[in-house]
Image (cartoon, rainbow over all chains, first blue to last red; front, side):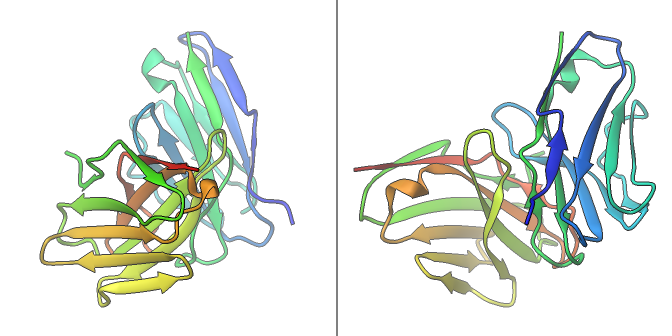
Length: 113
Length: 113
């Protein structure tokens, strides 16, 4: 069975550009999460979806960040007007149920130049 | 404010000996604790968890100890094997099923043959 798939694995973009990061969760997993890991730090929570709705988006740093999960499966994290400080590994995770352990993807390494 | 702290950035242990990784937390509302293991270029993988109603949980070579009064937990790996070399993250949440995990900075464990 496939794990959580994230594309692209690497993304280099110029400051000010718009980027989209995609996450395909494990089939059947209802809960989906986005985390961000900066160099030398642990993952930081961004947003949690239960089904199609964002159950908790309290970790999104500002309104340049937005995430959707329109059909309750694939999710896209969207970052507008990227800044150099957005450079990090963006991790997606899914779980079968809200209280099940998280299964993480390999992440998308975003570099803003 | 770092709510979950792993004060040792790295640890080196001889193969076959015990590895002890430590984690401290400050938020008394944390009720559920987890350890994740991360290899380079991969996402974190769930290792073991413990609820605050317990002080010990064991799974094969891995044991997690929780000292609520000291707000401290530790992960013991015995015997340590070369494949255990990875970065280990401690994480906490305010209740099991609340997936807004707060991670520590990680400890890089190296097992020497």
